[in-house]
Image 1 (cartoon, rainbow over the protein chains, first blue to last red):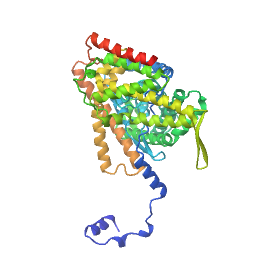
Image 2 (tube, rainbow over the protein chains, first blue to last red):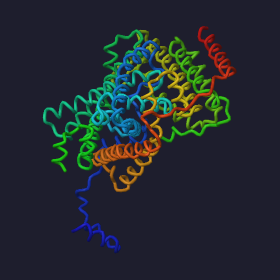
Image 3 (cartoon, chains in turn cyan, red):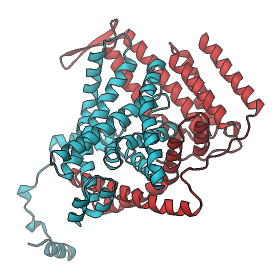
Image 4 (cartoon, rainbow over the protein chains, first blue to last red):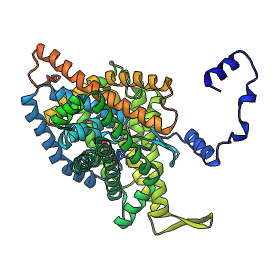
Length: 275
Length: 250
């Protein structure tokens, strides 16, 4: 029977149970019930990518600022150089920062942890504008989040820029370019970039956290424990971010290949061939 | 996103205070909180900070929303330090055949970090609630933060809410059409949403530039001009920081 006929019979008030194969109906499994329960009762956002304000002692906070500063300076230099040729570059980077901010505020349910987490978004930025400008974008997004959402912080801004901006951007950019050089399609390369960005950011965050809260405990075992603690959230989230990044790159290729050509993500020939 | 917006009481003393003075005070307090070994000083700063936030007219619900994520981290750090970060056993219990030991020194260290987090978050929240974004950016420019970074931040802030509204329109349209029914479809919808945002960002950047060039934009954004420092403000700020500095030393 067609769905249209079934709907018609139902709308006319007929008894439609005779058309249902109840013997094949299944109760939801226990695992699904538990996962749904966890998602309902534990909707706490686990913003594991950002190190909270105050968590790092002063020497470590200063040290991470010192590591981040040259990369931010290189980003600003690149921005100024590009801005001399094209006046639209600063508004573009500003709007991309707003996009990354919005993406990194969107909660994604992570079933294995029974909680919500959020994607980084820096992988997308690194693919489109390159790693140096992507560092600037994440620095701006992190600054706004620190000041107005208490995600991350001012004292941990350096550490957060290093993990999400520097390591995340370079990991995503190298993964994308590396996969493309090996002949992978845009979707697969986008997936690899999203995955690499997320997992590299999370690993760096673990190292930074361990350095900050170590006390007298040995460093490497603590890093291992923090990595283990974050695995239920970040392992699936990396896959989700990879899929999301791939979807985004493929959408741009389908709808606006000219943008990908302009940002040198695909060659002129590829753009023309697609058109 | 809703927790970003707070309508400031323009008549309040803290709101009228020079943003540079507020930022410098906040940085001094952050240094003291981060370098303090103990619980008393960071908790005192937290009490002061949250009290002043409430005095500014910030709703308790908004304040709690702001503290939700740091408090989650506090809970995680406390658990991690209690069960893995010490040598001096405090208690021991068996759960599902596994013996779990809590350590007293680990708990003390965890509480110290927790106090630091709460103190530092309250300082930064107070700055966020009492200062507008443009004032903060102008103050950061005065502190010699690179101009390029400030300009990008100003562009981002200006168009953040426009893009967020666009994102919500697309999100609700997708949701009404069962775009988030199931993981696979949800992921595909989210990818489309971010792609649509990126396209909007590119297109808007072109129209914004054209409009700005017609109004004389030459690649640099004008920043808010600061009024000269007021002696009374600076003196009061110094007094507060010095007072807290004395407490920090004790």
